[in-house]
Image 1 (cartoon, protein in one colour):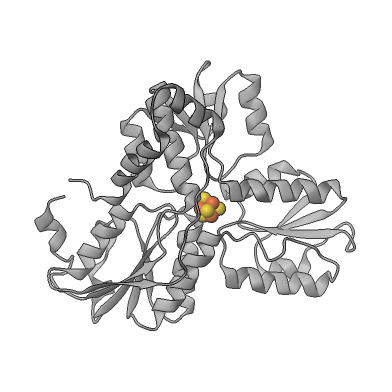
Image 2: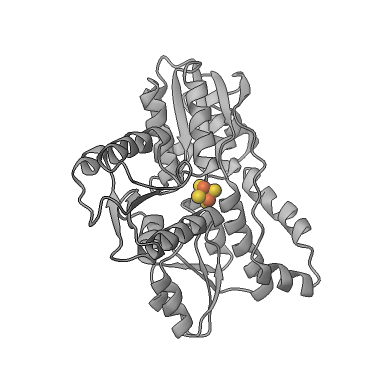
Length: 345
Ligand code: SF4
């Protein structure tokens, strides 16, 4: 996209934009996309990734052009290939299938999702039945439930919390999907704690720092804007939750993946817009959408909420192979990450 195109707003008007910070890529997503990038550099294409590495089509397409093949089933991976597991985590059955086939694997599961898997296994070892607060069909939920089959019941709503049955009310634990709305979980948990006073769980909940910080930032900006645009994919849980949080704060909110999705009727009478991005949305998309909303003369201001310093280490085998090939992982990370932060030409 040219600079001229970027400077024109999508409805020909200029307006003020408030940009939430933190927004966009979290530490788990950065780690996952770094892993795929390094695997391409080290081992060459084709490389297979089970499920979208992160829920964003821009990222997926970037990798597809470099020779990554995304699959939903390990059965689609040819023999003797390398397969990477996405940031959302996998049930042990998927790892077992890959191992049985002799496939080489790299696990890009976010460490905060792995933490939930470990909590689930520990609770079941201790004789607890688990109530998992989450959304049916989400790949992270499938991965977590797959670690403790037969010992976990999914609870999606307050209504479900009010009627869910468990084997023993004295031995019940709760866990949560990492990307939920803080307020929704609080409501569901209140019902579960009322019905099962002995329920145990993590100190707070498992909603990750990135999900929480982005929701806090959206709430903070909601009183200062006329509408909020969330940059993210329809299948991105944390992006959808940001839209819900904005709407619950009384502001019209829209999920968009590109400037082409912005409808001009959404902008009628709107002088100040807030922009944020889900944890899997690259900054390059955010900047393009900001340009489309702001126009040539609109102001742009960043609004700070919680500072983020979280970083997750790469898998040791990837770092080892990079060093043995004479590459410096830190330098590669610095160079490679630029592509997600700069609008492509
Ligand atoms: S949103 Fe949270 S749990 Fe998901 S990858 Fe990012 S840091 Fe990890």
